Every structure is written in structure tokens, then in C-alpha cells.
Amino acid sequence: MRTAQGLGWVLIALTGCPSTVGPASYSASDAPATDTPATADGVGVVPPRDVSAPPHVAPRDIPTTPRWCEVVPDNMPAGVSVPDGFCLRRFARVRMPRVLAFAPNGDVFVASPGTVSVGGTGPGIGAIVVLPDDDRDGVADGALRFAEGIPTLHGLAFDGDSLLYTLHESVRRAPYAVGDRRARSPTAEHEQVADLRHSERWTHTLARANDGVIYVSVGVYGSSTCPLSDSRSGRVLRLDARSPTGVSPVMTGLRNPMYLRCLATGDCYAMELIDDAWESAGERLVTIRPGDDHRYPCCQDRGVAAPGRPDASCATMPDARLRITHHNVPFGFDRAPSSWPAPFGGAWFVAQHGEVGSWRETGIVWSPANAPASPTRTLELFVRGWGRNAPIVGRTADARFAPDGRLFFTDDEDGAVYWIAPRTLAAGRR
Image 1: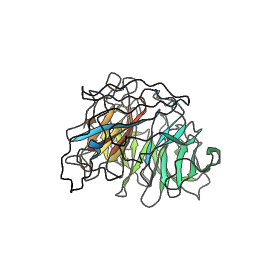
Image 2: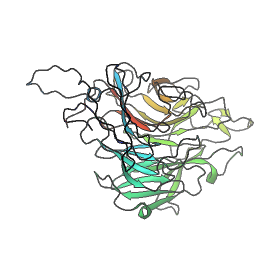
Image 3: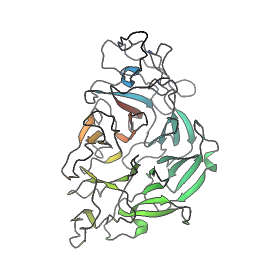
Image 4: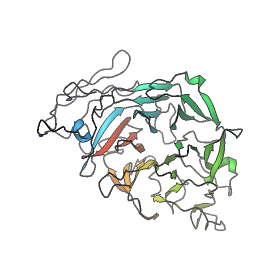
């Protein structure tokens, strides 16, 4: 939160995060942050910094609207960059933040699993965390535990008077009213709405379509059996109260469609992570269409059979909307609002987790909305400075546009949530 003059900020770290959360700045004139030991309850607090407000000259009788990039002093280390015309700010510290969701009132919710991921990240704290910003100063006022005791937590989605979330074996429903920052009932009492015990992977995600349909992803680790039985293939399911398990299939024949997203246009997409051993095709962003069979592990792309499967029929395999270089491990994704400056308005933005082990190519990448789905296209880095030997030793995980036009993203390795905004984007009045 900022001081009364709007000139400093306080950031509260969750238990388990480093107690030092002092920001570094591009400006050498800013005083360095000081280490602050954790308080008795294990929460570290950073004292306000004395920084200079951005210069602003305007007649007194003309009201002005602050811009997000002016509201928060630069709090990023040297070597982290975004294109000209944009700014990047750290919003909060959260241990192993994975999936983002925005509440109807704008509160930022994030899933912090209590389980180590396949790539070795974690564990987090096993809690749904809410990051309020009531004073609209661009930095979270605190990190509050909405619900906890959820080791395999991953997906989040708001659905009317509920917050849905995923566990390895199920989808649960927590009662929610606008403005809630603590669950209205204990985690053990949250209703199970879907049975996912057949799933190999625990990293499901959720997406809500404009028509109210809730999609959930289910992934497998890998197989050479062609074809796989439906019960063992990666799939996109929909919540279905008429089904004995609470879900029914929408798309089949996938390996690991881990991250899902439904856009305001009504279209819904899944980011399919292909088999680790395949090298002749890229990861695939695909449209969620009922009845589509993506033919894993028989086919690796449209018209391209999997290695050792020359007889596989792949000509009718659904095509990709976007392809991403294999092993870059694309996770969360979204499309920019048309209000973003050209050429970024309407473009795709993807959080690449990076190659396992080396973390090569982690960061936020982008592609024009109408770019061809070429398997050789390399998406361009939009956010630089993340990696194993980088200014921030971390890996980007989810990326999602807030209703106010900022792009939020998570770093599940270093443990933080960030936002990006055009320098012209107004913050609105408090």
C-alpha cells in the first residue's frame, strides 16, 4: 500500500517466502532496500521507500487521471525489460503462484499448490490467495489466504456465487460473494462437483465460457500405445451434473492440455503440450470444439504421424491456432485488448515456463493475432530478464489480462506476481 502522499509502498510476503522483499530500481539515485526480518507471525514487511513522484504539470482546475506506470515507482531489477511504451511492476510476493483468476470486484486470486510440480518447482503453501489492492496503488495491500489445506490445488474459476478450484482427484466449489477474502466455510466442507480420480496429472485448469459452460483439463504423462483408450487420454471435459462423475468429454486424444482460456469473444482454447520425445512439431494452441479428437499418441500434428507410426491417419486431425517451439513449455495465455497500442492490440501473449532443467526461453512471448500457425515460427519475447542465469532466477507460469487492461503474470519459481501496462493506460480514480 502507498503512504498518504502516494510515495512508498509496503508489500507483505506470505509465510514461506523470503522475508526480504525490497525492490530494486533502474535508477541509481534510489536508496537500496534494506533487509527486514520476519515478524513473529512469519510475515515480512518492507518499510516505505522515499522516492520522487513522477513529474506532472497540469492546471489546477483541470482534473487529471493517473496512469498505472506513474502510480508505482519502478521496482524491477536492472536487466529486466519490456518494449518501449510499456512498464513492468511487481505486484506481490506469493510462494509458487501458478494460476490467476480475477474476482468480479477486481481482486486478484492466485493458486499456490502445496505439491512439487513435475518440473521441480515448489512446493507452495497449498492455499488460494487473494491479493487486494483497495487503494489502487498498483501493489497488493497484502496476501490473504482465502482457503488453505489444498495440497494439489491448481485451477481456479469464478462461477456466479462460487469459486471453483481443482484438486488432483476432483473439482470443488467454495461459496463466494463479491468482496469475500476468506472462504465462507472450511475447505473440508466445499462441495465436490466432479470426480477426476482417473487423471494421471494433478495440474488441471478451469475456464468458464460465455454461455456458462465450465471446462476442465486432464493430462497424461505419455504413452506409445496407439490408440489410447478414452479413459487414459488427455482430454478437455465439461462440468455436467447429469454425469455420474460430474464431467463429460468435449475433446479427446490430447496429451496435456494443461492451461485453458475462454475469451470475451466466446472462443475457448487449450494449450496442448506434446510428447517430450517428439521433435518435428511444436506445442499447439487449439480451439476447444466438441467432438474433436487430436489423435495422441498416433499423430503429432495435422498430417504428421508420430514417430514409429507411419500408418497413422492424421490428415483430419484438428489444426492448431498457434504453434510454439517444442520444449519452450507454454503455460498460461491470453489475448490483449484492442486498446493496447499497435502492433500488440489483439495479439496472443503466452507465459513460457521454459525448457526443463535449463529454463531456456522462459518469459512472456507474443504473436500477432492473425499470424499463421507455422511450426517454425518463433514467438518474440515481450518480457526479458527471467531464467536460470538472469536478473530474476525464475520461470513464468500464467498470463492473464485483467479487466482494467493490465497483463498480470506469475513466476512460480521465484515466487511473485507482476503486471505490465502501456504507459498510456489510465489507473482510474480511487
